[in-house]
Amino acid sequence: MGEFHYADVLIQPAVSEKSNDLMIEQNKYVFIVAPRASKTDIRRAVAERFNVTVTDVNIVNLPRKSKRVGMHRYYTGRRRKAIVTLAAGQTIPELSEAV
Image 1 (spheres, rainbow, N blue to C red):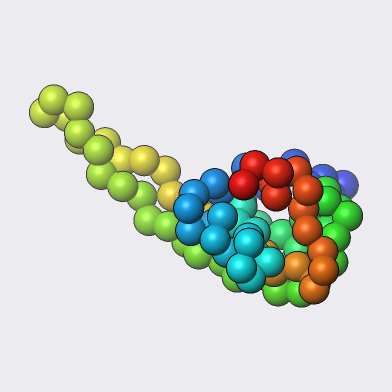
Image 2: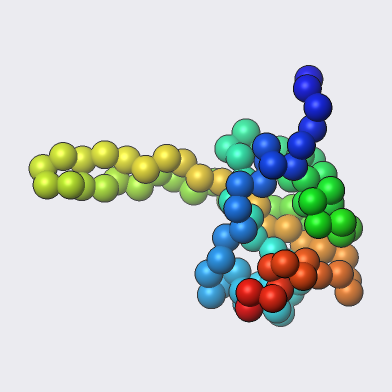
């Protein structure tokens, strides 16, 4: 296997009201991740990118959605979200400032 890089795993942070509530109340951060990324890969990528200790990783596989343009129908791609719990007292300042 090649060299590990966090940019191959973490696509972007998921910003929504629910993810902001999780961040503030439960110290959990939500990321859109690569579809083939494992929990170990995600844990390692978040720890390397943000220099924090990850205690738990939960994954949500989101199905593709049906869209229409006129009479033509197409589907969006599948997505995968990771809900990452950090150790007590740790935060990710880059994401916490957006709240």
